[in-house]
Image (cartoon, rainbow, N blue to C red; front, side, top):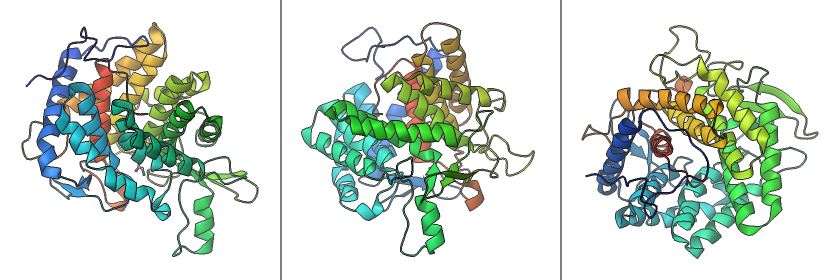
Length: 403
Ligand code: GLY
């Protein structure tokens, strides 16, 4: 079944609004995207109303989310992407069947954290962008309000993690005062809400948060910390550290990818040059640190032989971000350079980690690393799948996403 539409057909294919250099691998990526869409279609009846969380150990089968998990929207996002390309009702129906799940999250403030961005960009914002549904619009704006309301002066960011009743007081305070790199992606929801409502406070909060990420999570060489702690009384920065990476001073691959993608996307939305420059410098940092096949290990500073797991999710997020970055540069050597780097990473995924042809697999790529030191490596991950699909779409010229 060939369902990818011809780029000449403007009614079926989103035309580029910015220059994007052509990929050197159009045929391979078109075929891979075709396979991905077919795979997503076959998984609809297998998943039903369930949302994949992470693969069960040593299998290509997924465990599924409970009622409040940050990864719950990535399957929904794949369904909306498939609908955006094919127009097929099956994808839309399966995505909208999940609306009660996301409505329930909105109604539980105790579950809310910075992941409201992931959760609602890929569900209600996607639905609104593709269908114009007014309820989806209202849900998205409410999610943005709840995310913006997490700003706690004098801290210069939207609170990422929540203190819990079970936490020791000192730990609870540390959580309130910690900025993490994963939160970058959530700012797209605020930037979208600012454009949609004309209410500039959404954008003001997003810019404050992005500036804090840029100034506080990056080192001089443009490697990244996962987190930085702040004094909750003064709002002043304290130590940086790397919770999900190899060590405090190392560079966790997926964390780095969130920021490459998030800053490239923020540039496309706002045209603020500092976001493009930041994403580009972070991309330059990794360019000579990739293995031969283009797919990074879980940390860019891993000592030789130490838990040598790949993180295909980091590759997928980075590749999607690099295509966005390339799009953000006008014609010239910069965009060609970032397209070539994206091509290298995406081709590695297509050739060595794509499992769509395996009829027993419930995911698109294997060998993701959720959190190696917590024992979660060599998995299928729903965010790896989602960003793999987004990267393939960007590689062949799609420019409309839900960020
Ligand atoms: N918590 C977000 C991540 O693992 O990337």
